[in-house]
Length: 137
Image 1 (cartoon, one colour):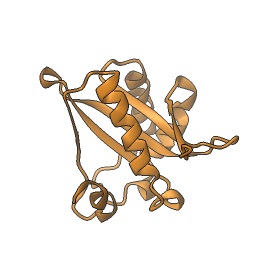
Image 2: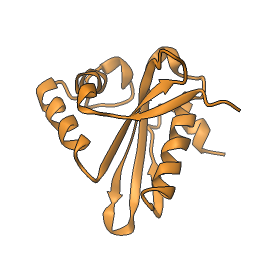
Image 3: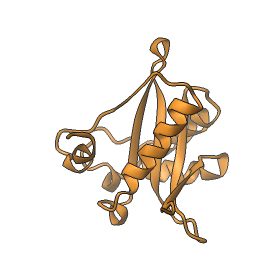
C-alpha cells in the first residue's frame, strides 16, 4: 500500500505556519485555552525545534505538492520512565479520512524505534469523539 501522507520535521522556515496553526481556534474546538499571543507561541515553537524533548512534524499529503494537512507532535511525558505524549491536529477539510491515525502510527514508529520510548500516551477531550474511536476498542 502506498503511503498517503509523509511527516516532515518542523524547521525554522515553518515557525509562522505552526504559530498560525496553534493559535487558530477553529482547529482546537474542544480545547479551553487556545494561546492568543502569537509572539509567545512563536518563541515556544522556536525553542521546541531546538530541544531534545519535543518533536513536531508537518503532516503532508504524499503528492508532488506535499500539501500540509496538519501537524503531529510528540514530547516527553515522564522523562525518567522514557514516556512520551503524542498529539495531532488536522485542518477540518482533512478530518475523518484516516490521516490523523496514519500520522500517529508514523510518530509511534519513530518514538519506539528511534527514540527508544518505553511508553507513549495519547489523550483527547471527552467531547472529541472522532479520535477516541481510533484508540478505543
